[in-house]
Image 1 (cartoon, protein in one colour):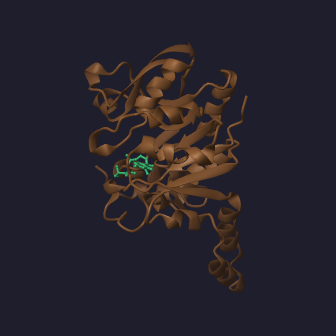
Image 2 (cartoon, protein in one colour):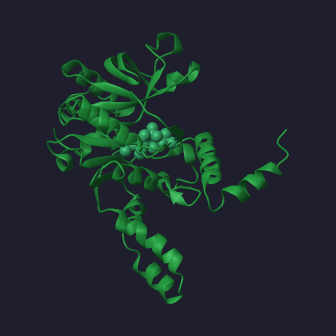
Image 3 (tube, helix red, strand yellow):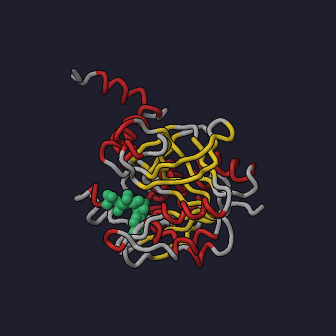
Length: 290
Ligand code: UTP
């Protein structure tokens, strides 16, 4: 069975929910406390055994590549000023990984973004990580998924989360049969159903382990509203051609692409930090919250 060596990070979206912050700065570079969103995802991928990071970018997203590159002037200045702790933080990022980036020339949807990675991924299974979904967990979420991929003979796996009530209509939702606690063999998927039409309360979130046959399925997917090619239709057809699993991952997900989720992540991750958590907790207690 092929190892999951490559992770694709679609990052060519316009980030309109964060305007005006994202007019010039890529959404993926917004920091949670002091680390850009994209770095959380990259660290998760590397912590799951991925060796190659592939960014799907667009005009104005150059900061993503620069972030993982050596910043010569910054490092030289920090070195000259004897700021060794800060120097090591900057160096750690550039030493994390090499990145490959591919341009998606028009934001034609998530399916189209993944298809853009086809020649770089080649004929091997790969991961897709949506950097907006920040997952705080003991075992990296992607690693949990790769364990399922390996256990079920190299079958594709998507990450699932239970969503209660009307909010389910914002997600792709699966139908499936639970084959072991937390693992579902998928029979169908529906994009953004009404609550009464949702086949389950299990929503698809931003982590996928996919087999390369998905590219052909995306390529033959018709464009929908606004010329966008979504991924759910191709995943649905993939589930019809081979066993496909969903994993209810263990951990806490934050939708950092949404303002409320971004704030929740900021507060909770700051509280967990050893260096600033206690002081931040004290500060929060002084707020008149009632
Ligand atoms: P979103 O739906 O969050 O869109 O895309 P967005 O443009 O990033 O943000 P909003 O909704 O305008 O605020 C989900 C993921 O798919 C990527 C995005 O970069 C994001 O990581 N994406 C989306 C692409 O790479 N290309 C696309 O054409 C669309």
